[in-house]
Image 1 (cartoon, rainbow, N blue to C red):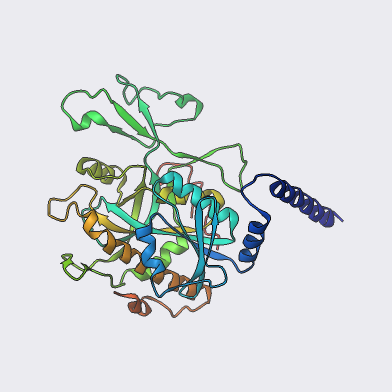
Image 2 (image 1 turned 90 degrees about the vertical axis):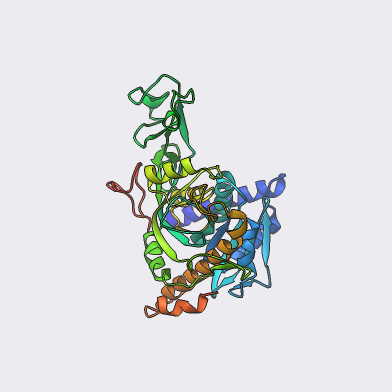
Length: 382
């Protein structure tokens, strides 16, 4: 009887909500709800999240992508959700637009509207790791948003409490960027302290915050990506401008995101020395934060298009020249990863890196650093 009553209650709530949406000037129409329901019946899907058109176009033009003929796309809230298959795996592809805000909003819409079993985020990135070159494709284990600061007033030092720190809003545990380290005299800008994000997990209390700085990708996805390290990638732009060596796929420890395009050697060096960062972008941490809160597995694939202002060669500032090559390499790695994932879903343990030649041309910690994973919650949900 309790079960029946529970079902009736849910139906009543849904019916009231539906009537409200139908009878008001709401964003979701009855016709749209019907389309969403029909789409979700054919799920679950892998969600593919991509920042820009020039990064998405190589995927849509790839023979690996087959659009759904009956409903190739669905427009909602200014976003276009494309349906199809990649390597025979059902996917929903969506373009976010530049920046953390766009990436977070779009990812939340994707996982709210549709039956999503995992998120694959890909694109290009700057590079803070001197051991890698343009064209290499990175798959970081952790991501952090390094653009959330507490800007300390001039005259205060490292032993002085930050504004609102006593209330738990801010912390000095993660560290700071001291502007006077980059000039001789004192700098009136003083220093900024890096802050963790406030997160409200779907399985937590909606009004009790948790904190996260380093956001881990899904352990299973990250382990599976090791099979991609022998993948052959493109090395030339229009068969004229070629890289010194053939690019490689490499799993790295950390990537960072913020609403800043980094093309500055000093800041690049700081990010690598302070955080051991490799990939630098403007979206991945936002995608990861949504997946962390919604308990959805994710991984990010970022191909290096520039050196973020570093390097002393003619290739040190070549984002315009090599971005197309990097975007194509990112798509090659994405499709190869989906193929691996598809065979794993199908239970084909024999499928591995040898079969990938044909593609050639979780844990949540309260904050701080992955070296201290105590008290973490498992995010390997599928």
